[in-house]
Image (cartoon, rainbow, N blue to C red; front, top):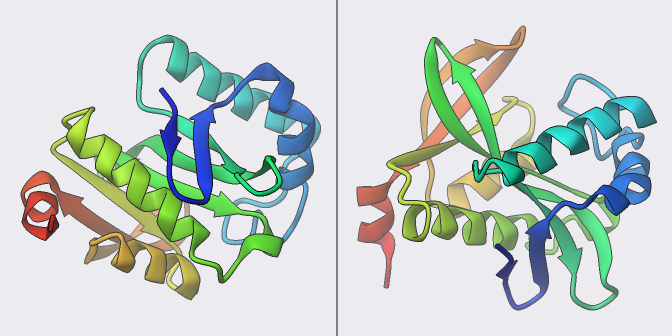
Length: 173
């Protein structure tokens, strides 16, 4: 399944994305507010997990391709998380620094949210965000999500933003 917006193509990851993805995930700016930069081996494991989720028809991450230059600029899609003992589907996103402050993460996250509710029929989605990550908080808010709670996730203080299907349908024009 491929999603398209006015400026982006969101497509499933492929094995041949390894070089560009490894370059992104080795970048401290790209990986800030995470567990740190990834080695090529860690990136390969991450990529294999995403491809495996696709193979098994589970919600997964999309490769974010910018239409203007056809460049892989990040990822946006779904992670399967355990938050305070509850299974959740997270909309997670990262975009290359050169593409920050252009509304691209919001554009991708909205397409993924709409896909979650319209095609996948998910009951709710969340975004897990470090309290200091103000740009990601803005993306979640622009995506119609509301701050639900603060928790500790993987040892870090984390804000849980959420939206459910009813809130989404109520926000549709």
